Image (cartoon, rainbow, N blue to C red; front, side, top):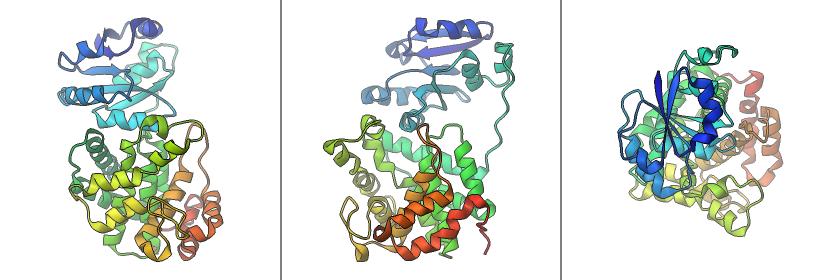
Length: 361
């Protein structure tokens, strides 16, 4: 019999699930305070409000003591990528989305027993192995976002390894394979950063930029939105339009990212430039500094195009992903906001989903 500790949830809410998994797992319910007073076990399910900052620090410290191989699953809303990001940052190994049943829960925790727990359910197909370079990128992101969420120091060397791994992966397999892998990743926590990174590296390869510049763009792609770790979830995931004050706060995320990476400065100046200026437009309508054409570097222009295109490729609960052709049309329609020469060069990269983009040219 497996022992599963459930933190933050009331037992009546799990009555149906307990009946489903009764022959496989014994569920123990604990309040947050009771849980962190004892060492973590092998299997823990956590269902708490991820907006409560005071709890998150205590929980992160507690989970740092979990035994090797332990699994910690957070309950999150399916539409909330940021809840997943915070769960990972404080030590979660995976998330499960509401609503869920007993078989789904067991499948997250215990390999090979989910099908027997509910006899009528068909066995789950195993996940395809992910490329090592992809895993290096995810691990790097988890490390850095964890530091950002907790206010700890950011290890630039970890990101450099991850950035180099993405360059290798794009050169070996191409952008189409990268996008497919990112979209299949079970957590989708870092989908946007990984998509932007892959697009930026593929674009840089097409432009025949140096290996050093490709790694710079890869590094910046993964870190460009790190400042959102300081923006309240209520704003980041608000289903309706933001009011003026909320929009001001949202538009502060490039500045927050700059502060995180420059105090003390842990990345070179050209990478800080991409982090703080990836929302600047050539016509001066961007933010946070309202820069105009001559003030915006070539690498920033590349990362801005990649950021817009990557966002359009994302698969969200409220929208299907754009095709490459549809996303490219939006870039073209933005006119004077973007570098027209670069947008024209980007057309071939945008055809990745037609399998016409070759990495070796």
